Length: 116
Length: 118
Image: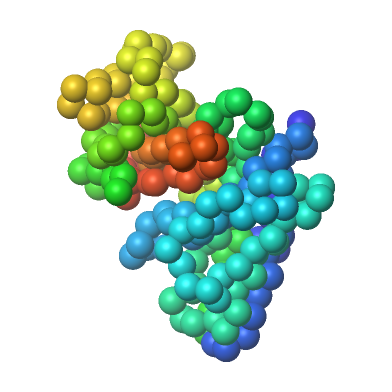
């Protein structure tokens, strides 16, 4: 079974631009979560989507948004990019079976975003 | 608020040595889940082990073992007979069940860089 895939793998943008990152979960997984990893702040939770709805949200400004499609694929958007948005963005998926709590999240390879 | 502390920033060992990575967590919830992930230089987080708060049985899986102690809020991870391929950053993570029991939100520690040398 294929793992979590993320595209693109690398991205260079300039301040003020916007960017869209894509994540395809493991087949059958219904929950997709996004995390930001920076040297200064470490790994931080951005948000989680389940059944096309945002189920959990971290402490990030509104410039960070996401969505999930009916096939569970997810996109994350960052508008008005700032230098501090340079990071590795990781997507994770989990089964999210009804009645099961906190199922294991499996991560993709990440998208490295550099903002100049 | 939940918190995960990995006090060891970097550990260097010689191949075949055993190494233990420490993790201390804080949570007010009675139901929670603990994880260990490995991040090689490629960047992808690789799932290693998972433990829930109501099961303190410690286990061994191949060269990996873990020691979960609720009394001290610790979830330590041991690699036996370390190998060069074990070199990576290891993250301990905590997940809490939400009010409705669902949701996935991991709180990570700052990670421990493990270097295994020949």
